[in-house]
Length: 79
Image (cartoon, rainbow, N blue to C red):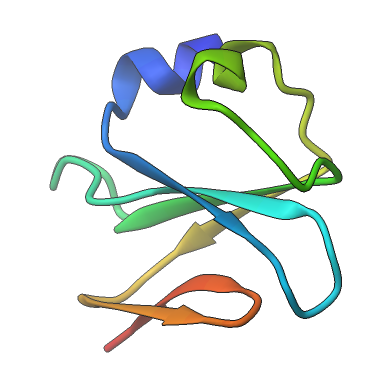
């Protein structure tokens, strides 16, 4: 996670009220990349910004789109 935070400084943390856990959503990312956001799902329900560097994640998704949407299961991107 430390390498990702060094490259992408803008992130949001959202608890997934739909099926538990949390999402760390990196958006926006620099236009040099082919994706517009990164999404990490983790099992912990409560995350502090100071704890983010030590997090072990189970899933990462590359998101594409230009409109940020927040749903009950976290952030999404739409075109």
